[in-house]
Amino acid sequence: ETVIYRIYYYINRSQNGRLTLRELKRGNLIDAMLHADEEEDINKVLRYFSYEHFYVIYCKFWELDTDHDFLIDKENLIRYGNHALTYRIVDRIFSQVPRKFTSKVEGKMGYEDFVYFILAEEDKSSEPSLEYWFKCIDLDGNGILTRNEMQFFYEEQLHRMECMAQEPVLFEDILCQIIDMIKPELVNSNLENCAGIVQLSRGQAESYITLRDLKGSKLSGSVFNILFNLNKFMAFETRDPFLIRQERENPTLTEWDRFAHREYIRLSMEDDVEDASNGSAEVWDESLEAPF
Image (cartoon, rainbow, N blue to C red):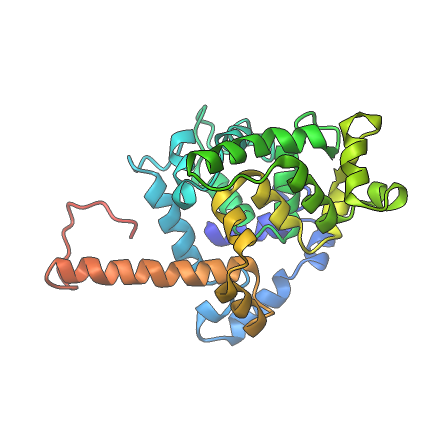
């Protein structure tokens, strides 16, 4: 099921649950299947079929699903990534704006819904992710992101920084940074500097960002982190040299590939520690509900 959800997340761009021949031709599924046929180690098939990737997704869901009814609510999702996300963005997800839930239980996200969320959250460079988060920030659904919409989400980030005694970064400065990163077409054609953008956005005219603008920039994912993921925003601001080195050493890996690799190692180490604390890795208590 996880493999299928991943395939549909990336290839079924119409999100209607049916793959067309055109989508199949445009996607990389056939190549991934051929790779899976030829490769003995399934974990080397990073596209769709990796067991390690499945393990990370499932364990992440299991950690949040505290009562193990295979459903998670807003309060569960708020704990994701060490409380990285804002309440406002979680509200938008549970309003089913970026994607209708398949769980059929009001106020609850099912496993399939979570797979779409985690893929979008951990690799904001992919087009499905950009579309997912764009819908969240586009409050009025008119296909553009305005200054007011971005400020609405950033306000909670600013409040969290103040609560954590971190030096807050004012929205005016953030807006300049976002415009410099994305270089929207409207701004490119009308403005020459960031000061002009702020002046215009205060009332003389309205600068805005389109989905096309975001898809044309390699830094778009960082914009969404700035707006609603405090942990990743801080990491972006400090430019973690370890992550930069990782990217240079493996430029072909996606953000998702790197995330899944790190998390699999962490989860494996936790399992080893838990086995050691139980006295033996071979002792199994069937009374304990476990993912597997």
